[in-house]
Length: 265
Image 1: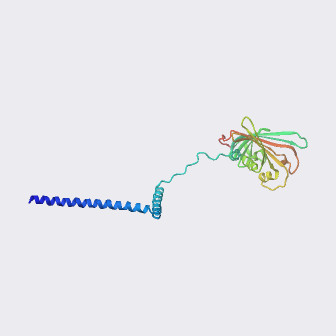
Image 2 (image 1 turned 60 degrees about the vertical axis):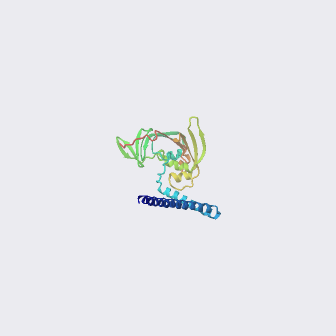
Image 3 (image 1 turned 90 degrees about the horizontal axis):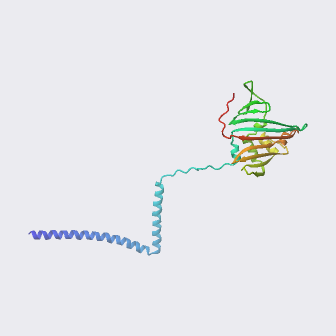
């Protein structure tokens, strides 16, 4: 009886093993049949193109999904800003010390006269001394004050030198013609410009004029910084009435960007 029972268990076990082997074989047959089918399809040119197309779609889908999940990158800031020209730097100057020299001669006497102003500028404020009579002046937003007996009084005196600010001169030079450039051994550069008188008046006075003549402006720069500007203004000063045989202004700049402040006192 026991022997018969053991034989039945062996038989059941054998049937179970056979069943598992059949399942394994079926899986292998399915796998084999898939690759066999793929191989047969690949051998057909038409189906091969379709298979390649499907693979491309799958590839592009994976790439697109990866891009969507990738973190956004912050655009890199430029380390260096675009380099400004010497004229652009000069245009934006509003902090410097200056010396102006006005030289003119009356047409009747032809006697040469000079006037020197020495001062500094900080944005919309300026202070300077007229070396001719040792008088001190202040300018605040275009209003001229004269210091007299320790007090400040508004003044009607005009100083053409003080109206030729860097931004004004820059506008003139934009419309001017560069006539000559001279390079010196020390690295400094001299540039000579000419501008039609009517253009000069249009910029300087914001008015129309048919005046004929030319204005000559010369700049001196070094290390991309303009340090001196001269103006031959003879035709401008004589365009309504001939009074002068010579009229020129030279302005030099130093300690650019180093003026702390100006206190009216």
